[in-house]
Image (cartoon, rainbow, N blue to C red; front, side):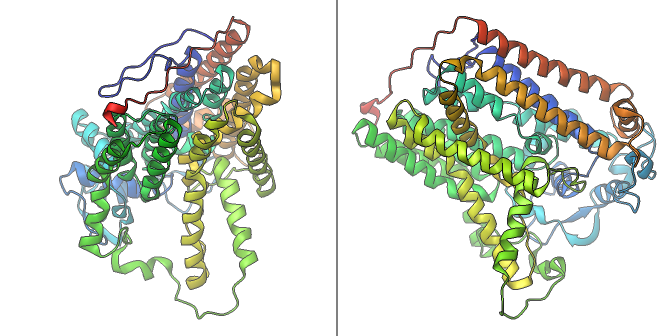
Length: 545
C-alpha cells in the first residue's frame, strides 16, 4: 500500500505492525468532513434530542453538576434559542424560508442573553439518565475557549465539530482490528473504508449527542479485545482494556453488556495460548469497574435502578398514554415496526428532519446483503481458523444492543401500545465487526483480484455518501419544485449557518477533495508493489500473567 504511519500511545505501545497506510489516515479526514458537512445541512438543534444534549453541557459549564433524574429542566437559554427552529414553519421548504424566526447572523444572541441557565420549566431533561463523560469533555473545551459567551448557534456548531473530531479516528481503529486478525492489507483497508460508508453514522457524528462517544469508545475497546483474543495477555494490555471498558461504560447504558465481551476475549486468548491469565483479566475487569462501573452502582444506590428514567416521576406525562389491559397483542405488527424503523434509520436517519431516508424495502435489502456477507466472512473468509472466534466476538455488540432495543420497545408496546427507542443509530457501536466481516468476505470473493478491493469499495462508499448528501441537502434546502440545484441549496444553508458566508462551500469542497484523496491513495495502493507486513509474534508474557 502507501506510506504508513505508526501512532504512539502512552501506557500501551502498539506492535510494530500497527502502521496504518496513508489511505486510512485520509479516511479519517474524510470521515471528519462528512460529519461537518452533515452538521451544516441540518440547522442547530435539529438532531436527535439535541436541545437536551446541549443543555447538559450548559449545566456543567454553569457549575450545576449532574442533577438527579427529574431535577433538571432545560435552561431558558437553550429553550428560547431552540425555539427559533422548532416553529410551525419547520417543514416549509426551502428550510431557510421556513426558519424565518432565526435572527440574522451577527444578531444572534448568546445563551446568557436569552436567560442563561435559569430553568425554563416544562418536562425534565431526560438526558440525566446517561453518564456525564461526553458532556464533561465538551464542557471543558467550551470553558477553555470561553465559548459560553458566543452566539448560541456558534456554541452548538462548536459542540458538533468536537463530536466529529471525536469520531474521526474510527477508520484507523477498524483498520487496526482487521490488521490484527491478519485479514490481509486489501481487506484491512476495505474494512476501514466500509466504516465510513454509512451516511447515518456520518450524520450522527456531526451532531451534539453521546452516540459518538459510545461508537468510538466501543471500537477502541474492540481493538484492545482483538489483541487479547489473539494472544496478548499482558498485564499492561489488561489495564488498557479496563480503561477502555470504563470509557465505554461512561458513554451510554448499552455498554453495560460489554464486560461480557471482556471475559469472552480473555477466555479465547487463554485457550489460544494454553495459559491461565486470571491476573490480567482481573486487572481489566477491576479497572473497568472503578473507572466506569461505579457510576451505575451509584445509580442503583441512590435511585434504586441501574438506569432510572431521566424524567423521574413524570414519565407518564411524557408517554401520554395509560397502561392498557393485557389482551390481544399484534406481534406481527410490532416486528413490522422494528423492521421499518431500524432498517431505514440505520442508513440515513437524521433526527427531527428524518427524511430523506431509504425506503423500508431498500433498507431491508441492504441489511440482508450485509448479513449474508457477514456470514460468508465468518464461515469461509478467515485464513486462520483460530481467528474465527475473535471475529465472532467483534460481531456481538450488534445482537446485544439489538436485543436491548427490542426488549425495551416490546415492554412499552405491551404496556402502552407504543414502540419507542427503535433507532438504527444505536447499532453503530458494532460497525467495526460488520465492516471487518464484510471486507473479509469481499476479499476472498475477489481472489487474485483482491488488490482492487480498496479502490472499488472506496468508489462505492463515495458514491453512496454523495447520493445521500445531495438528497439530504436538496430535500431540506430546495423548494417543492427543487429549482436552482445544489448551488441554490448552499446559498440557503449559508443564511442559517453560524460560520459566515463561504464557509459551507469551503467545507463541501474540502469534503470532495478528501474523497478524491482517498480514491487516489486507494488507486495508488492497487498499482503499487504491496508487501504484507510481517505479523508480530503473539504476546503471551506468561511472567506477567
